[in-house]
Length: 395
Image 1: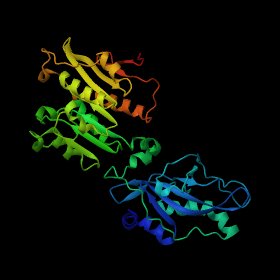
Image 2: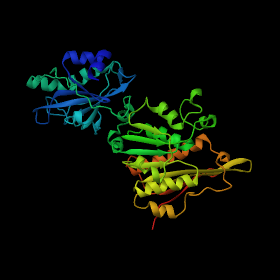
Image 3: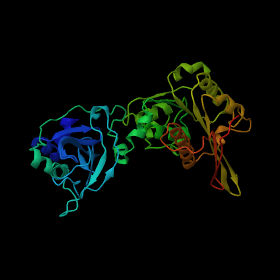
Image 4: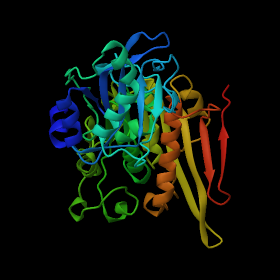
């Protein structure tokens, strides 16, 4: 990654050639060996960190005029903090490859003439002049150490750089998914959207299961681009091809899950159950409860009312500790109704997506990514009144 970025971006190459201690940490430019004065006038060494915005796999641009700084407040020759640096205290989580760089604050200093830096070379040189100038004058310090660190933390999950995480400064929150192995059981309308959302979440592994085939009607409640050649193939094959160029750790299998196929769930830390038939759901739930795997079951029921569609979207959470209690509350259908023919069920893409959204948001609450005010285990969204009712108390 180091050589690719330096060879494809002239401003980064110029930083290296001038002698800056350049490194790259997934989505950040790191420049070490930045000398500065502390409050006592003593020489200290810090590091500058700036976000990388990837235009493609190898070309980058700066995000804005700001930088982060690993170090205390830089002071001038007069013993006062250097003025006009703006910003404030903050934290940015870097990888283990840069664990010596602990960001403590941000700086915001626009060039007066243009209001924006031309490139990374212009930006880093400007901040070095401001921060290191007093240290250079008093101690003869040199920010140009020609020390490049080419070790880069591997972005092992995604095939592209996850610039969204660094841009939003949520690296520490995203790290909470790193050990998860997720099962998505059923790739119908809602299951397909669950898979789409989880594929873009940095969980370690995703296993999805569905024995059914992908037909034309599936295309109308399926995320992503549809190819005519996909029709008639197993859904598992279709979605493997659709997402394998986005991330590693994805496997799809053309099979149903029941208590006899429990080996497929070994190591799974969380599951999403996205099936329509009650009998199939019962077997899946029994298998998950037996293996003490927490899971979310989704469901949807629509009907015509006064000439329009009405109904509810459901999300039910079964924790490892309370799964049997939730099962006994009969919130989900565990048997096939004679009058409930699957092919006649109404499912609409936006409601499938909403069902998936609510399920994935609830999962991310459980991991501490989203704030959880109340530990809900059952959620019902009513289409007619656009209201959500929920249950949180268990015996």
